[in-house]
Length: 360
Ligand SMILES: *Cc1c(COP(=O)(O)O)cnc(C)c1O
Image (cartoon, rainbow, N blue to C red; front, side, top):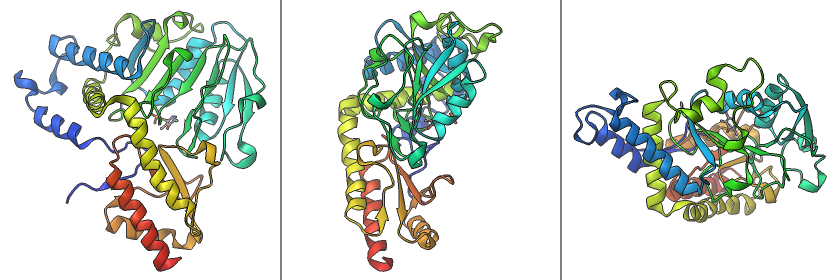
């Protein structure tokens, strides 16, 4: 079978060029006689791979020198606990914006370590928008302010960076990191599971300002202390070496493509194709407020949910897969991360128009 167009929310599509490079390197990386999977993480070959991956990520995102880049495990879900363990720093309460399913999970976990002040919530309209910052009730004494700039399930993205004043701003960027330029210096900490827009599952990237390190809550396990990993170049224990290697290939691919400014242009073009199709149609609908329509995850519904199964079946027959919406939202969801080619989005739009004509 030829490669299909995979609209999965994660693990998600990877660039074909990256997979081909990995294939060529699989058994014998650059003539060194072994696979990256077999290398000691303390050997010079692997250490070079990881150092290059970090350098390329720093270049792509413009990460300032006073920030540490950590390659961890445990997914973004472990960060829901690791962030409060490291960032409460003796303060009573942390601020959280609640814009959907991932925000809720982060809030639930933080409550195990301290008080949580929900500055605003969009639950009143089923998490289909993001509350404007002038409606947030922030606490100037908060330990940190946490938000989810792209809610992967609801397809709600926040395109502006909140002003947190002197309070460290923390972002779960699992599904929109590297999709467009962001000013890292505005954040105290950024985290992201790799399996959406970075690489394979099993790697978690944390970017943390160095003054926030070293003040964990009592009893924090060694492995849950960012400082452990910062002091040891993410090699306190065995890092997820193969995943970091693939992430490094993705960073090289992004650089070759023209970096994040160019990615944003392409991502806006791809998302535009799909949103234009939704807006022009009386049959398909986007539930999300126009100013918060995600460039990465695009949920949509059919006018008649009884046609969902037929729509998915027809899509699959054309090599368009993983379009079923999250069970909490229903309908469809197309995830169109960096690695989804524009041809894939165009094929989906063509199919949608055809389906509407035949069944609408
Ligand atoms: C996927 C996702 C998570 C969970 O990631 P895991 O790596 O599976 O723990 C958390 N937050 C957001 C925004 C996500 O998209």
